[in-house]
Length: 217
Image 1 (cartoon, rainbow, N blue to C red):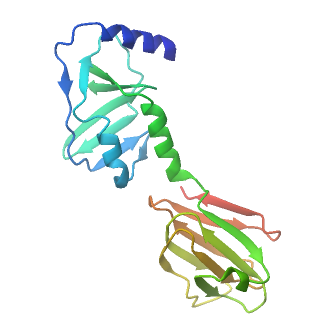
Image 2 (image 1 turned 90 degrees about the vertical axis):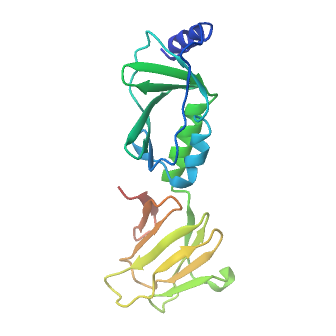
Image 3 (image 1 turned 135 degrees about the vertical axis):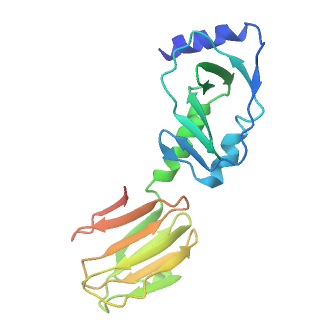
């Protein structure tokens, strides 16, 4: 099916270029791809692949449906993204432009928001060898959770209904920093944080310290 669509699009390239249009999308308030909200830090990378491009009229093409939308003031621009083409959907009209690997680029962008490869976490009995940047004290027993960040993280928090008044909230921890949690025999812990794209994650583990990092819904 993809090959068939690409053949149709290539065929249109040899057609006349009358009624071409150029789009200029200024300062969108929101960008959605596959219903995932794109972080504002990535807006410029997407816009430069669309703004000031020549879009050619596209006829006799049945769109599957929009999967990229820009919301700007009271305007919404809708697109269908194929492997190497951008289809602009304007009411009952359609326009296209070629952009190599555009779908791969957007898929990789979307996936980086959800990756759980954010921290390394281990249970140790001697934390001094790690020379931690942050220490959170829960219990004096010699059992420690060591967390090493693999990117900047935000709103790091440790909670336990077994301990009150934990000094546990850190607004930002930079990439490569080491956190030591003196957990002792406390098992009921909730560790949470956000990645740079404001996605919330929670760390859970069982008594055998089988670790799972989950993105919250």
